[in-house]
Image 1 (spheres, rainbow, N blue to C red):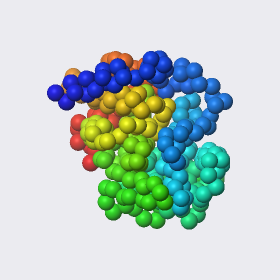
Image 2: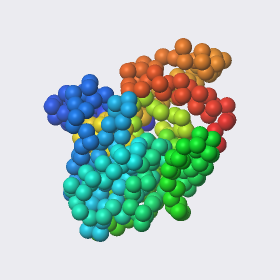
Image 3: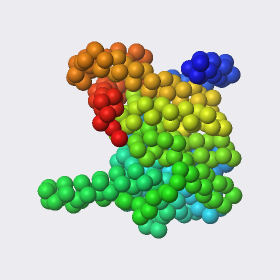
Image 4: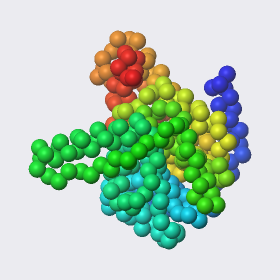
Length: 318
């Protein structure tokens, strides 16, 4: 029944979407979408004082950040994958407003979103889930140990001083309020989302990968589906991904539903292969991913997804 409702929702939304929007290629690949790399980085206005920020990372798809401007300053959700890329992002924000960046939400603790955080203002206030803070502490220790062995300067991993104490935090930026939400484990153990109720925008970070094969290196595959369901149940008109393109409102919901179905399909296919008694390696050779096989990074991420779902089935994920 639940799946039927989601399917009907997709059909209804497509019917109401203008033909010009429907004609846009549904892909995370800039070349297939017809977007020149010279257009990046670019800012996408999502509301009054609410902006998405798309930057290109290797192997050629977007890493998306969010920033919200209030009277008292700017909140940024997710950075970029290097100090240089994060400096560029801060420079681009200054073309929109001279107000200081005062808050930073760790939507994802992965390096492609945090590796440039050393460029953020030193007095910035971090909002981070306890699980992500713990992961950043482990990453910092690993970076220090690696530099000791290599003789190179350590890679800087910024560890926020404190973590959230609940699943929701409201922040008044001055004239606009945002809610930082933990809706459950998904891409990581500490995925945080940023909700702008006034504009009905939800930035989902890496819990939503628009037309990118589900990346499961540190994921909780079955729980991820439930987390997306909670996002879909919210009063939101525009869902913003952590990778892939920012879509117009109606299309953003369609694509989030499509991503949810991709998660379900990948998990179900791996469960089928596991039930046959195949090793992860043989499962990779036998897998039928259907339409998701055409999504960005499928060949790279599929073997990782197989191993992670096997770990979940066999009780190695806690």
